[in-house]
Image 1 (cartoon, rainbow, N blue to C red):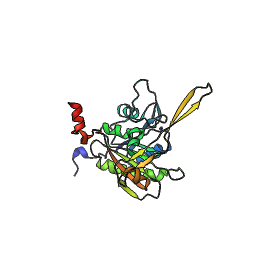
Image 2 (cartoon, helix red, strand yellow):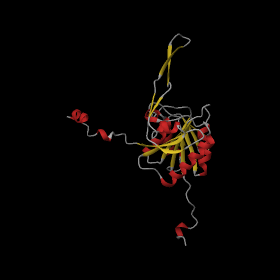
Image 3 (cartoon, helix red, strand yellow):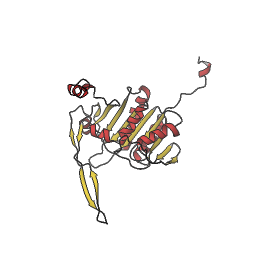
Image 4 (cartoon, rainbow, N blue to C red):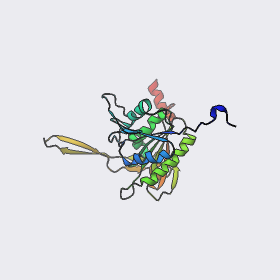
Length: 261
């Protein structure tokens, strides 16, 4: 027999917060909004426009405007980190049980990507607040297409497990989903993608120079156990990222000891 205090109570539905760095209107996040709604009550608090490669930037020097798009969806004139602050302090009914950042229409693989990425930053910011958080990115097929239906189902399965079991303390999960046919899932460590950015110079109608920074074609470096290789070989890459950036192996290095003298 149930205790009197438990009689008639219903299990509390999980609260799931979604953000991205591509804009609240993107189809990728809207698909997740609907798909993850089968697991809990979903909310979108995301930038009102693209904010790619903004990392953990916070807007401090100008005011921000917010648009309530529809029930449980807000567009913020700011970065993914701004969005999470607004979600936690203004919009959500309570602390979320899960934060999902993405799905990004392109990979976030290797040590450089994860440090630049606004998508990954969204998950890291959630982890700073003690929320189980994951960043999700998609690799397009050879023709540049993304299968959002398959990807959303994969995210739903991972999200269900994280909701049930959590993640290790201080750890965010970076997920990269390749195009079909998917060979399986690998737990990976970060590899490297070396960029050689191209600086493109143009001239405006007033004969003044302006510039674009291009990414160029990155060179992937790593072995089969790294995210950059596993994802491009057809495996879903699950990479745990820790918020502690201390180089523990260097704490007792002689070079640092000499500096400290």
